[in-house]
Image 1 (cartoon, rainbow, N blue to C red):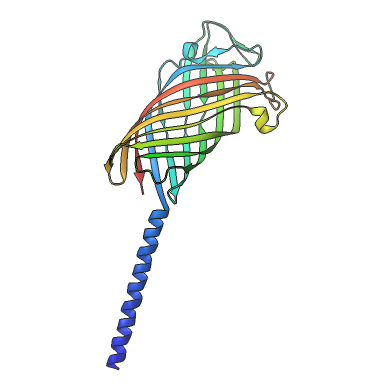
Image 2 (tube, rainbow, N blue to C red):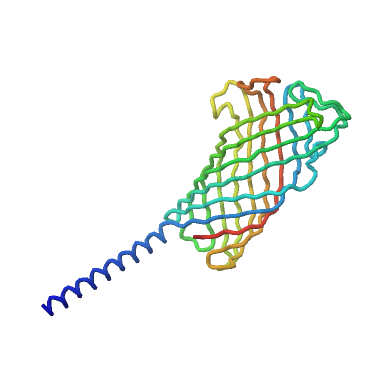
Length: 282
């Protein structure tokens, strides 16, 4: 019985050791197969140029010159990044973008056949947040200094653009939810174990009618390009400074516009952002 007890203890110890070794191996394999990062970015946005027009006879309105967008606006940009097997990169991004101002009109403003007279004031809302899911494939997985990834992006825009006279007598709004595909790339250079620089861009210029089958010609474009310098401040945390250009727009006539107005829209914007943030690797 004593030998049987020793034998049972031996097999119990062996099984426990085997399970622990398997768990350790699984954890090691899992750690090699994927990594998850959370990115938090905060800073300010400057409008470099921004013009918009609703209706063929509407005013091509200069937001920066006449619409109160000549100041800085706060901006945040949270995202998640999942890397699988060191080569497949999936990112999810939410970009709030809300610009509000109140201005005195020196000239008449026409929006979808409605005239806002010179000498009156108007509340302006340009709310254009977007959601973005991207996939990239790392093309240089064995290079210790350089990395280069190429892929594509699907962006969902959720736009609300409003013009409201301060006395409440005149109001126009344009709302739209749309899906925009784009190309994406990212390249990174690792100076040493702690310091790196990174360039990333999402962009496309294309006739929207070709993409969605519409009979009306609509030209659309987006470009979100950034330069980032970062430093490791903890084994799991990087801090960075980011410079970004955010631009794009569209011009054309919508088939499904319910009015008022004829459905014609021309909207082009050029923004610059300066931000700082952190990358946390789980």
